[in-house]
Length: 103
Image 1: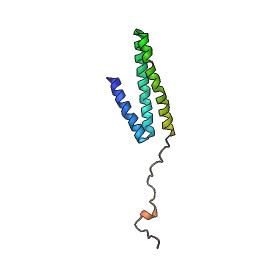
Image 2: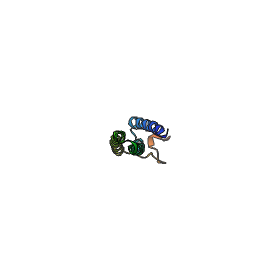
Image 3: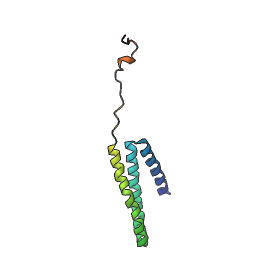
Image 4: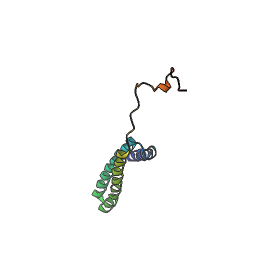
């Protein structure tokens, strides 16, 4: 149940990261992907205790997700930061009431 919810959140954050192209969303996606990899490795180790063949065949699934984490963090670092929003600065003269436009 918990892994299903985690996969749904991972899918939604992955789509948002791609379509919004936001640094924070790529980091959230990569962080959730790390959690999924750890969860799957625990399951693989547990399955290997009972059946080595199935355990080794499942071990490839988390390994395929590791490049996704690496590329996700690299994409997050490649996106330039947005400049900070202006705070309490003087408006330019063209927006003031007593401004006379040039003739």
